Every structure is written in structure tokens, then in C-alpha cells.
Length: 109
Image (cartoon, rainbow, N blue to C red; front, side):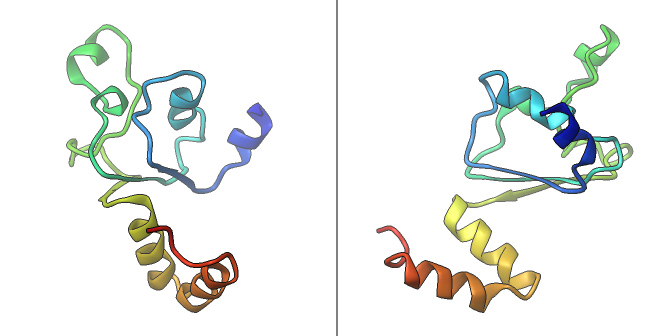
């Protein structure tokens, strides 16, 4: 809901082309102070900020390639399982994630 996106303090997007609405719009619905992380196998061109479109008023999208203006967007190129496992290790949740995965029957093949 709109209230959820306004209250969001971290947006993690993974495994998507971000080409289909309404999901693709979520990236731009969070507050401007909210960090946005994309874990994906490739960079979806439909989700990137584009300077030419910005001249026409469209300032939406991730700013991975705009070092001067990117203060909140992070791109991690990986498949979702590996990306989530790496993120969990970094924040100290690796053992907890592994326990959940094992309880659920293990990682998918």
C-alpha cells in the first residue's frame, strides 16, 4: 500500500525485469532517503534512470551509473539465492538463513 512504501526504510528488489506495472513503480514510491538494493542477474534497462528522459520530466529509476547523484542505490549482480546468502552473511544472519533453508528441505538445485 501507499502507507507501506512511505514507511519503507530499505527496499530490496530481486529477480525481476522491472518491466511490468505495478511492481516496476515500487522502486520510485519509497521515500527519497530510502536505500534501494537490486539483486539480479542483469541490470534491467527499464529500471534505470535515463538523463534524456529526465529532460522530459521522467526522473525515475535506479541511478547505478550516475556516481554524482547516486546516494542510495546498490546493484549486486548475482542470482537471487546467492545474493541473499551473501547479504545475510554480511549482516550476520548467515547461520539463521542456513537453518531456515535446511528446515525447508535445502537450497533448490
